[in-house]
Length: 139
Image 1: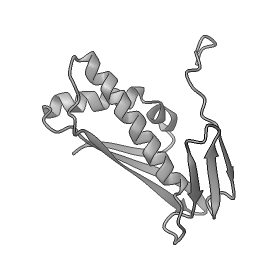
Image 2 (image 1 turned 135 degrees about the horizontal axis):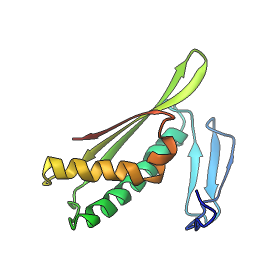
Image 3 (image 1 turned 90 degrees about the horizontal axis):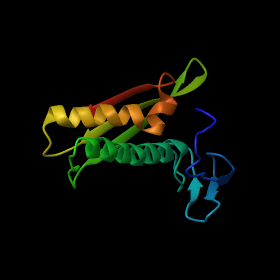
């Protein structure tokens, strides 16, 4: 990033208790969730689900920008199924991700171009690039 980078938005949350019976709240009150371990019996969400929701929403926005540059309107029923795996390998935790993108009605080559462009510009995709195994598929 350059020093000329302009901050567009800052998300602020306060989390206590972590993924084991914790809570996380945003400073504006719009997010207020209970946290539970992944796959556990608790009533809350977990960081992996929150990451999947955030990334897929951001990716959808990046696809809209990529489509607009091509003078294409994304199909109304476009969707992204995000899967985030929490891995444990020899005592080290890691993540793995799959984004399964549906763009019904678009030519597969055009759809793939939009997806590829979105993956190059989505801030979440950029943040994890080279850090975790990511598969982005057109379904």
